[in-house]
Image (cartoon, rainbow, N blue to C red; front, side, top):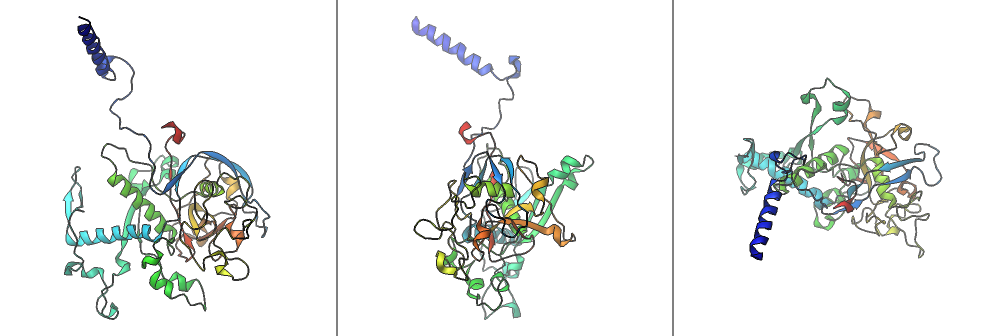
Length: 411
């Protein structure tokens, strides 16, 4: 009899639970069939929690530029790549573009669940097929009979939404908000020669991006536009291979200037270097970053030019080479007086310059200093810039993605 009573109780509990969340329950329960979300931790990224900091110069303004006046700001949490994007990581992007073009030429198409014609990635490619011949140098463009990929054919098309225009132009149509771009994705290997006059750097263009010896070195010769294209592809890749019942994530992107500085400081507010400072050497006299010490003594710090992306010790957030090695693109436009205009909550100073805009509109902030810079540019508060369509042998990048939620501890 007792067992029967227990069964009846269990039966009514199940009925009650089954009724919860249904319209006929008459209760305000919210929509119950929402996708599950427990957060995520992207491979190769570290979590930087929300916080506040004092941005700006943490030491003497050597050049008296006053372009980095101190200001207190607050930053939302985000994930950031623990190293600069390496040659091998960027090569994954290049190979994706190469394979997608090859599939297009071969006609490897299928229809998805929404009747869109998409690439059938399950079809195996044969790059010796004559149909793909146009992807390679032909005739007098070929060198010494070698079969070489024509890098100019590797172009990536991507789109993004202009959220600023959507918020401020109430008459804007959806079509006008969708921005499109196409970029050549292969890094500019010749920047190694172009950046330095009367300097023998020809082995670098021949080997730096393609040879396995440099797989774990930071990619260089990538413009600001190419870096943004990489971020767009990385978002697409993640959403393509996530679980079917998982919602799309926030977009991978370049860090804002404020996010970069916040991450570089590693929790050491008003400190000149990522390790705290104030010196560029440790107690044993060893240099703590890859830069240009002294008067041209490049190898003193352990690297003649770039070094592996995880060389030297990370800062207290677990981020490598936030000073030196290669300078890094941010998404911010450069303006000498930007700090005065920016809000103190998630500062953001952007402008998507068009090809016909004045050159001064095309300046983008770079941070961190590089292997060819003096230590001043390695300081966390030092600002510098480069034109968005230029490529340099000393500029790379890393990605961030905004954390969705108050804190990672909520899950």
